[in-house]
Image (cartoon, rainbow, N blue to C red; front, top):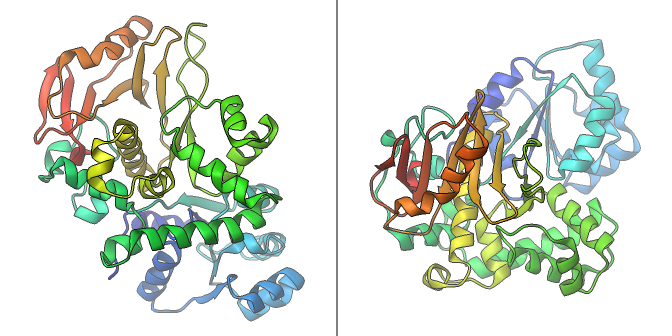
Length: 405
């Protein structure tokens, strides 16, 4: 069963302007399925080839000219990161005939793709990032635009119990898991991890210690929502600090985790300038951290951090799914004053607090009150939690259910 993706419309619109469209995203988020769906909508008038197939990959690497003679535009090339040799030839063809939508490319390794794109296809390519299924897509509760605390949340509400939130959180957002509840989670994530480490990691980085890398990945999952401390990670993993930095870069490059930057804008030396660590998929994070059951995860020591990760990624999806690059940060001072998220939009800062609570209180907004002492351009805010319906917590501040994002 195909679940329509919000990025479809953005992709089609971009394809009507850019000669090359690059769709990035982690393994299994649905890039190939989306491309094949769009091919069907086009009436199958476009060539399709996947570089997962060894013969096609070998030809693309050894003879890019012949490859593109065999698969001429308009063409969709899946997993293009396996043959960066194609980029220069694609550039030549685009410059000869700049036709919108000539090349649709997909790839899972963001950094290696960006290197090839910046060197060969700058100014010719539209880049879109596909994430796992969002609440909007799975529950069909479409918002009028990306999430902000002041628009559209009243029209997107659906009733959901706290344990149901953690069922989705533990299951994760890979489309295969949403469309078939019969898939065994442990088997799925075990296979995913094995494929990721044995194939993607070998492709993207010269990592020889694969067992140590898997242990490092599990240590990262246990640090969700924490300030990134390379020294602590390196010590616990038994590796050097330089290796820890290299491996974090690899995990970011392969779309497994991301770093949330602090908002400081040179206002004060008292503000934290170290990023926080999060996973793009909470299901994978739960598997790695050993939280295999929703009830256990809900009652466990990491429940607040996992909920924060889930809410943050859903907010990010509301932007990426509309082709927008969000300006989202956290804010924290060295004496512990903190706001979980800040969305910067049109010159305003919109504060978001995330609390695993069914009874939000005004004293949960201490960080927001502190923020207002540093910045004057504060917009409306929200405390995203487990309430059933939105209600005001103060002037221009709402308690919002998690389904409102």
